[in-house]
Amino acid sequence: MDVQNTFYLLPGALFVKREPYMVTTVLGSCVALCLYDKILMYGGINHFMLPYWSGSGLASPKYGDIAIKKLFSEMINIGSKKSNLVAKLFGGASVLDNFESSLQVGKRNIEVAKEMLESMHIPLVSQNLGGNLGRKIIYSTVNGAVYHKFLGSEKSK
Image (cartoon, rainbow, N blue to C red):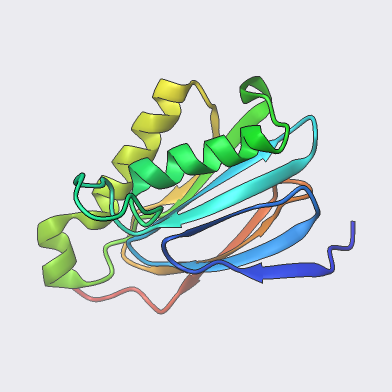
């Protein structure tokens, strides 16, 4: 299917539509969760920056625990059934050497996503996670396909 609609997903945001879209985002230590309804054939995606909301300030989708619940809720709101959803995960790289490696943001983002998917009983059917390179992904909401490429080059340690 030729998808004419495109959308660029910013960090800390999510996107859910019934209409076919090609959604592009760029990930470093951030993680993107793509949910796809394999029966109704549409999907949604989030892009979160940090694993958990601390409880102070705004409960924003920049936090993994909030972003995953919100994406799931939005998919249900537009007609999906939980049993029809499958998940794909991308990102979680260590791209900032010393600072990021001490905080392990990418690793913690991956962990929260996997733990929540498991507790929600949503199958993880594809993933490309970790490493030390950023990624550009393009998600087709009409068929659930995710195209990705690595950005930059391997760092020498």
